[in-house]
Image (cartoon, rainbow, N blue to C red; front, side, top):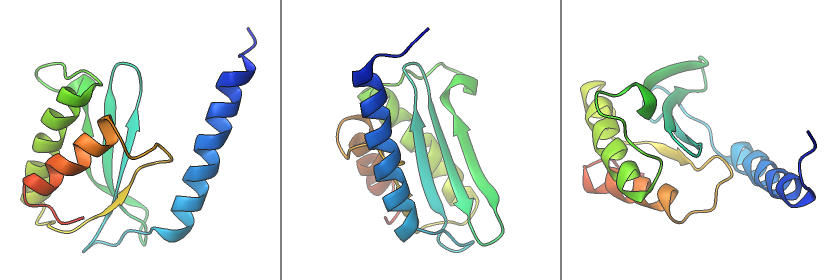
Length: 121
């Protein structure tokens, strides 16, 4: 099946933003890069140490005890869980990588809830 031109253009714009952002952001063990991926059903969040290429903390909302949807309320729940995981790993400061998504809706709700839970962006 062929994808529509509008969808292809939207994906290309997001990938262009993603490359531009990744050129500026890098994570370390002390201040990892937190990246978010959103699908229509789930959110996938990782804290990455780019110097070693390791994922330090990981959360997939599909594999949580209660299924968390990929909407604003779900992003707030996921951010609270992820903030607790970061604190357990002794990480209090992060570099936020929005992965090419615009900073509104789910992405903004996730970042704001991380801040409310004591994580510095």
